[in-house]
Image (cartoon, rainbow, N blue to C red; front, side):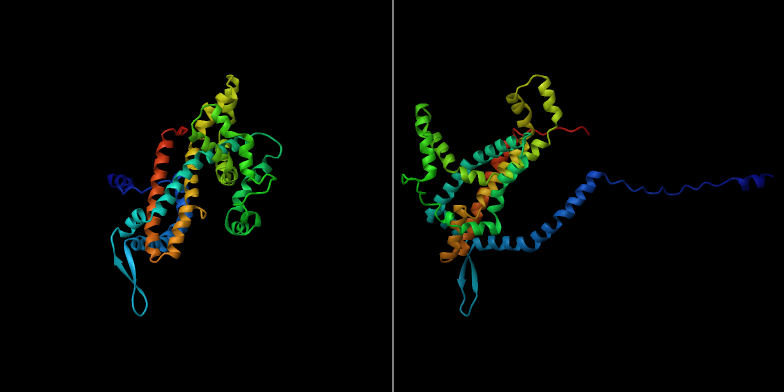
Length: 327
C-alpha cells in the first residue's frame, strides 16, 4: 500500500530557469533603425573620406620634391607651411579676417529674417503653401546644375556693375540713398558702426533672402510643433500677441535657433563663393608647392570654423529651452 502511494507521488526536479528574452523597447528599435540609416555614410566615411583626410594632414607637414624619372618625395618640414601661411602670406590672413567678420554680420540677419518670415507664413492665410515655395525657390536655384546655369547668366555677369537707373548709380545704393539711413541714424546720435551694419544689411538683402530658405523651413517645423492649446490658454488669460511671442513662441523654438545658427555658419564658411575658399583654391592651382601650402591653410581654416561653432553653440545653448516630457 505504501509502495503504491510512493509511486503515485511525482518527484519534482529543480531545473534551470528558462531565460526570457528581454523585450526591446520602441526607442531602442528606432535607434537601431537610425544606425542602419546612417550606415552607408559611415562606410563611405571610413573607406573614402578618412584616407583623404589623413593624406591632407600629412601633406600640410611636408614639402613635395620632384624625383628624377617621375614621382614626388615627401620631405618633413614640421610647421613651416603653417608659419608661411600665417606670417608670410599677408593676403591669406586678411582674407580670413574679412570672411569671419562677414559671417558675424550674416548670422543674426539670416536667423532673424528667416524667423520673421516663418512666423508670417505660419499664419492662416490664402496661398500660404505658394508663398512657402516662393521663398524656398532660391535654395534650389543656388545649388547644383542650376547654380552653374545661373553663373553664366548675363545678369549675373553684370552684377558687379552699376545698373543704369538714369542717374548713373547702382540700384541697391539708390535704395539706401532713398531711405537715407545714414542721415536717420546720424540724427539719432547712433554710432557709425551700427550705421555701417544697417547699410550693409540693406545692400545684402538679396543674398540674405537667398540663404534663408532652409532656416525658414526649420523654423516652420518648430512653430507647427507647438500645441495650439498653449496659445488658446494664453488668449483666455488675456495675454497679448507680444507677450505670447516672448513667453511661449520664442522659448519653444529656441532649439531651432541653435540649429539654424550652426547651419548658417557652416553654410556660409563652406560655400564655393566664400572668399577664403576661393583664395585657398587659387593657392592650390597657381602657387608653386601650393598643394601642401593650401592643405595647411585649409586645416587652419577648419580649426577656426570649429572654434566659432563651439563658441556660438555654447553661448546659445545657455539660453535654449527644452520642453520636459513626462516619462
